[in-house]
Amino acid sequence: MKILVLGATGRVGSHFVSNALRSNHHVTALVRSPEKVQINDDNFVLHQGNALVKEDIHHAIQGVDLVVSSLSTDGTTTLSQSMGHIAEAMAQERIKRIITIGTAGILESRTDPGLLRFQSPESKRKSTRAAEEHLEMYNILKASELEWTIVCPTYLYDGESLGKYRVERDYLPDGGTSISVIDTAEFAYQQLMSDEYVQSRVGIAY
Image 1 (cartoon, rainbow, N blue to C red):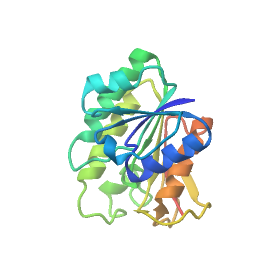
Image 2: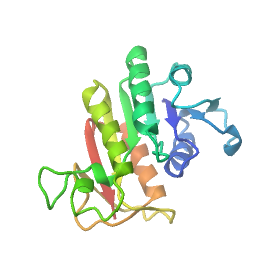
Image 3: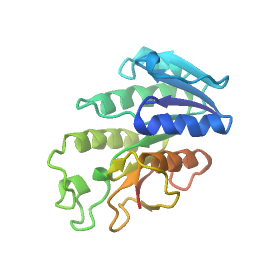
Image 4: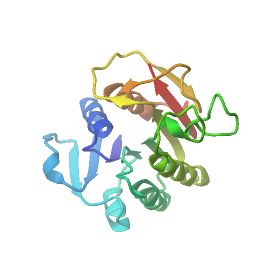
């Protein structure tokens, strides 16, 4: 497969790229700071650019089969702005499949039906800014005709892979409190070969 990865220098994105290259997929990465990328692989192409610039997205997306985005909010509107450009470029290029990394905050609340986790006492985070930005991204994808999957980890830590974790459509697995960056990337990578969670949010936790 030919995959465009946005957020390739991030915590989840960098592990996703490693998984994809190990399996001989072709990876194109759009990054703002190329010096952060130390990859020497014939199947890897690096584009310097910004996901907030429509022309950079259109240039990088040429010839790919699907898109993976693990962009962070950056405390701004990065997610919603970039997703608008991504969805537009994918429609123009007739690319259907996109896998993104979200947050457990935009999953359904178990305690307050009709609310999302970040809107309910179920979420322990004091600030809702990041979750609101992820919600904007989710709404853009829902309104599109894309075949999207949003992987929604709870607390992400930089530990080892445990290799065993729980996933649940639309909800965080009951009692789940954390998941490693590596296992989150592994599950996202598995979605390349699966349509089980197309047009779904997927909670992931140990």
